Amino acid sequence: MHPTPSDVAVRIRGLRKVYGGIAAVDGIDLDIRSGETFALLGPNGAGKSTTVEILEGYRTRTAGDVAVLGVDPAHGGRDWKSRLGIVLQTGGETGLLTVREVLRHFAGLYPNPRDVDDVIAAVGLEAKANTRVAKLSGGQQRRVDVALGIVGRPELLFLDEPTTGFDPEARQQFWELIRSLKAEGTTILLTTHYLDEAAQLADRAGVIAGGRLLDVGGITEIGGAEARVPVVRWIGAEGRTHEVRTHEPGRVVASIVDALGGEPRALEVIRPTLEDVYLGLVRSAERAAAVNPGARTAEHATAASTAADAEEPAA
Amino acid sequence: MSTNVMTQGSARIGVETRMYFRAPDTLFFTFLFPFVMLAIFSAAFSASGEVGPRGSEISVAALYLPAMLASGIFLSGVQNLAIDIALEKSNGTLKRLGGTPLSPVAYFLGKIGQVFVTGTLQATLLILAGWLVLGIALPTEPEKWVTFAWVFVLGLTTCALIGIALSALPRSGKSAAAVVIPIGLILQFISGVYLQWNMLPDWLQNIASIFPLKWIAQGMRSVFLPDGWEALEQNESWNLPGVAIALLVWLVVGLLLSRLTFRWIRRDA
Image 1 (cartoon, rainbow over the protein chains, first blue to last red):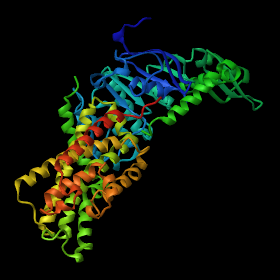
Image 2: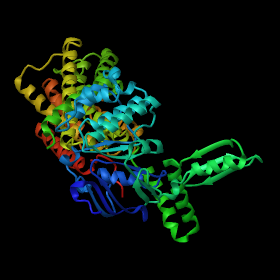
Image 3: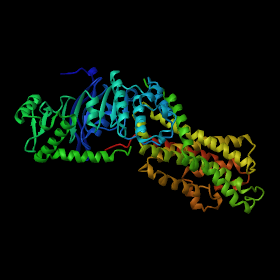
Image 4: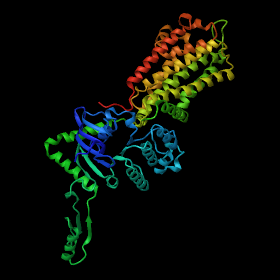
């Protein structure tokens, strides 16, 4: 499939970022379509943050072509930035303004902002609107970060670990908010360590490790059909745990019941979650790196991007 | 289309000024410090009676009023902005602003505007306190107030730009105050702010003359000290053209360094 430029919000070809001779991002090709929610997954130091920061215009790249909303982020001007929303991993401002003051100020920087009170309500901070940001809890400050990211009515929203510090109810609310943004046509690039969050929100996902994309696909397809084969698990008459991977779990369960002549103990049918698929992908990449001497680059790249993360502004 | 730079700039002046007055440490070390020092010097040396050349004697408080005005200009510009921007760099404020359509010009208009709002308020209150509380006689000649106006505006603009440039020096927000405050203290001691200018040896006066604070303090003395005091200056003159030239040179230096060193975030290799 060759999507036309207007269908593609983010287009990446052969992206590389080298720090001190070591590749933190080592040849990534990726298209993110307009209006989709894309989850970028990967272990710490995999090159996720570096990739996203290149897309946001914060970092330069060593090689490759990148277009974000049709613009090279290395030369993105103010008009381009007014079409983006960026929720960074760390806030940490001094927080001397109130929630409403800071949102009103940021709204004023954009040509077509959302209504400030609507945004405050959307992140559930109505009761704290006149409280200084410094006096909020960590999770509430995170909601301010999210509110600042969406107040400019972005076409493309970057969410970097958005729900860190949220309680379960706040997370559910946040998911609803993201779904409503998506319904309005916002393209969303989500990086998260919460695989259930990615499974809930994303249309497609990419798994990145050692600076390379291991796999890209629909949220229910990534990792391949084989990785999603259900597992039937039960404890046999002799007290041993049995596991069978099968495309026909119902038939397997029936045959176990037949064989045992009764109800099997601790019977489970397990469908691999996105987390299982993700861990499978990352672990097999690590095993390949350990076995294959040519994979030294991957190890180095991981080390390098860890160093890169460390040199990021304590921002 | 992003919003207009001037609209953004005036919005920045508003939030910057609000944040300035909500931060207790800047309020004390930048805004109130000259008041505290004026009170301490006036009280500490009140026993020494009047000072100055024969026929032009004034109270110690009157001697320290122009010095503390100069100190206020320096603190409001250099110390305030150098620490403030270094902190904003390290705590993520600048990175976040850099991801919005905020123009860097509007960001700096906000900083300089905040310096002018707070610096003007500080100078006004200092002069009023000197006049009403310490009974210092203020100049009545209009040309003295014209001199005050241009030294104040030029000094404050120059100091704001130097503050922006100096904010690149601290490696972290935590070290910002520790890097910037000693520089300010040393300059205030050698530039005739804390110590009476003519008590300093020639070689120290010459070193101080490299830096802008000496010239701001000299300009302020020319406004607030009576005739006769110019005999205690270098070359026995207020040398106002020298004040203007030195401050303009530093203004250009500050502007160039700010332009060269400012980044929304620290650049990688």
